[in-house]
Structures are given as structure tokens and as C-alpha cells.
Image (tube, rainbow, N blue to C red; front, side):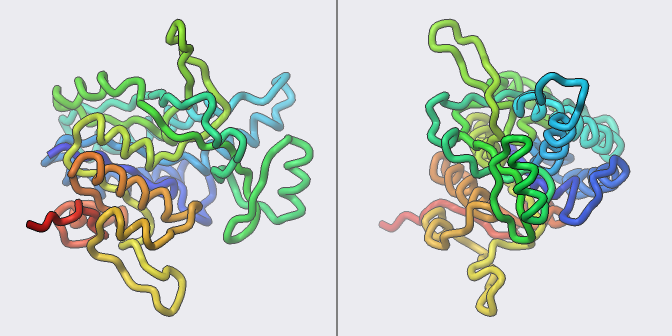
Length: 307
């Protein structure tokens, strides 16, 4: 079976973690332990988030007196793909001896006229108190929005149209290689209409939507979205909260999950199932093997045909 695994942004830096290398190394070991059993049995592609990492790089770049201008988000995204990809590749190399593993910096096409460029919504980087966030926004030209525990920078998040390296990823999979790619949704680029030349854009693409698109184009059988909760919950955070064990794309969309938490994950799972007829699931990182084997997580399946 071919599985695309989308690791949540908290896989390497959980809420409250210091962004130290040692912390990310420990968490990458946890990721390797969680997915190693699946990689031994299946073809696996791993994608990952980068919200904390790219936000920190953006902050450092904006404050660097050596630079005449901060580095653009597309190149900062490429840096996070290399950083996180290297950590994951090393830990997986140790967890699965003899398995061929490659970490790729990949590029994701977006439309230059995507309306998301006019409405920044993607939260990146650390959480700040309101007065600190407003001061940073004034000095650095940031857009900011309120988070559950404070304020964060927000950037444009255009819809992914295609992963440029999909064919190369497919070739690697057929050779038995475990591929780590599309980190942070991939490096956002547009293509020139006449020449096809690629140009980076200042944005961060939703990594779950890119994972769903990549899974579709790779003809994957299963999209596995791993996060920090064991199930998708209806009424999350209320006294009526209940786990959803089984759902169709329509079921998920009726729940109206928020855009800054479960919403993109639910939409990614729904798109993949609708477009391919395959299966998707959302659940906790440490239960990855159990989720694929139907013993944990929220399964997202096609509508049952009647007749």
C-alpha cells in the first residue's frame, strides 16, 4: 500500500517547547518510532509542517543587521525543508536500518492571482502578547491575528496547484525509497506563462492540502494526517465533545471546524477521499500504526453507494 503521511507542525516543536535543536532531535526520534513500522510494510511519503520554524527564521532574518532586506518566505521555507528533512532522515535511517531514505526540497505551484495573497491568514512563528505583536507588526510590516493564547504573524496561504517534483518522487517510491518532501507545504512558486520559469512568492502553503494533492497525484491508497489529538472531535472543547470515529467528506464539512486548527486537516482528508475514492484518517502521531489498521483515529471514507 502507498501511504502519504502528513506530520503536524507540532511533531518536532510541540506547543510550549523551546525551539532548541536538542528538543527537535528528541521529537524527531519520536516521529521515527511512530512511523517505522508502517515504513517496513508499505511505500511511504512523509510531509511535515514548519509553522514554528519558519516564523523563527523570519524573525531572525528581519532582525539581522547584515542583510539589506529580510529573506523572502519562499527561501525561508526551503531552509526549513532542509533542516527538518535532515533531522527526520537521520532518525529514520537509524530506526529502519538498510532502508533507502531521501529528504527533498520540493516546490509547489500556486496561482499568482490566488485571492489568498490579499487576505493573509496562515499563522507562523511564536505567540506574542498583544502589545509586543502590534509593535513588531509596525516595525516589520507584518500582518498579525489573534491566536488561542496570544497574537501571531499571519502570511498569505495560496491553494496548492501541483508539486513540481511529483514525477521524481514517484520514481523514487518505485525504487523502494522512503521520501521526505513537501515540508511546510513546499516552497511556493509561480510559473511563467510563456517560459515556464519558476518564481518564488512570499507565502506559506497549507501542508495538509499539499499532502492531499501529492497523495492524489501519486495515486496513494491512504492519506494519514497525524496531529496531537487521537480523534477528530465534534464540539471540541465543550462539554458535549465527542470523538468522530468514522466520517464521510460531507460529514466532516458539516462540522465547520475552525480554519486555524482542525479545518485544513478535515478539508485535506475530504478532498483526497472525494477525488480518489481512497481512505484518509486523522489521529495522534504515536498511534500511526494503529490508525492505518483501523484501531484508532478518525477514518474518512467515501460515501456508501446505495442500490
